[in-house]
Length: 262
Image (cartoon, rainbow, N blue to C red; front, side, top):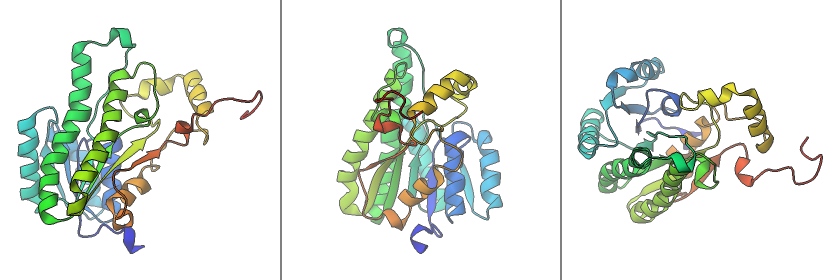
């Protein structure tokens, strides 16, 4: 359907060297978008760039450290200069520190919040200013199921993702009158390089799947449709919302009746 066609659009994806950022980049390219992809080290972007180009799309690689305000400003200026415009922002760059709450250090907290919340805001600010001037834009902040559910060992991460959800609503109200939509795409439990070691624990994976109504963690491709939807004209009247793509785990699935969900 033409509503989902991104031909003629340019999307900027942060943290695009691997994992979900790479998947988002390829999904948008398959839908027709040209790409600006970022990472702290542009050399890490070569594989993603090659795959985007193989799909027949243009791609620009830009260095960006989201914890450095000057780097943000320089990267967005470079992106606009190289691509001519940014129609879509996928605010994906993030990190995590898994520790019991009593063991979280001051530095742990700052690392996670500076990356996942402060960085998200100031990247959106730099891109959003120019989207407002053009009267069009799609901003997709990448959150997590932790923005609506609490998990032991993920205190700073959950706080940062909850903040992303709230920030999304505020930016949507700020920029909606100027033709810019701002939404949050919140994945559930997906295997990435950051958490791969957890998926080596068969017992843990089994316990996780018991809590997911669809009975499996997220798989490659499960986020392709949602990110294209939020980037496209199909979502033109949707803003300030959080789209959970989590297999249903956020419904609070438990064995409420003995023998149920066996």
